[in-house]
Amino acid sequence: AMKFDMRNFRNFRSLVALRPARPSKVRCLGTTSREKAMEKWNIPKTEANYTQLSPISFLRRAVRTYPNHIACVHGRKSFTWQELALRSRRLAAALRGIGVGRGDTVAVMASNTPEMLECHWGIPLAGGVINAINTRLDPAAIAFCLEHSEASVFLVDSEFSATVAAALATVRRPITVIDILDSEANYHPAAGTVPPPHHAPPAAAPAAAAAAAGRCC
Image (cartoon, rainbow, N blue to C red; front, side):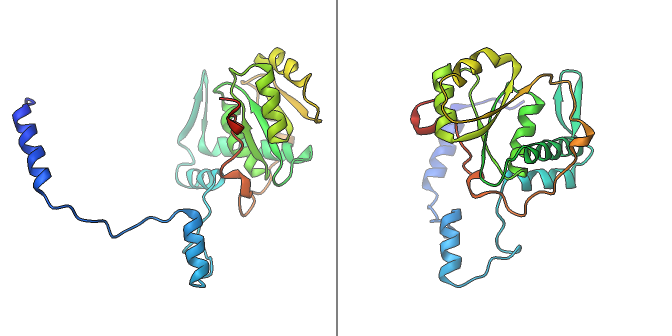
């Protein structure tokens, strides 16, 4: 077995210090800088040189690469990536059915359950923007998050019904509230599926954070 010797560590550190530094010639461009560079040099965007990353593209790749691998385990139930994708698409279809469209904010308040995971894909699949609200917030903070994010739909775990009811009493904008009643339940097959959009909505990358404007954390 190798023993840790501080003398060896000091010698190694001195050797590293004597090694001449090599300035990096490769600089990674952020999304905005890359787009500006492509625009400057008149380079058209194609699938070969530009891909907009989103939760949707991650799910697509996971289903294509590991369709039968376990993606989520919750209590006695588990879901493969293919099953999780199907549930997420059914959630997206249900949201589309109640009028959620491109750029609409859908707030979610739930514990670490499969439903919360599905919301992170189902909402972007429907074209919406997810606003995951911290379950430890008080009614006033929840109301602020709903107003500030301009949420039109609010998915709520029934565990937090009392707190949410107090928050909604002070919210002035109309919000469709949907209870998550049972994490063991499944989506009705009639919910159907929807094709994923070609590109995620522009606001989906940053999403709507519960720390909006520094008021909630």
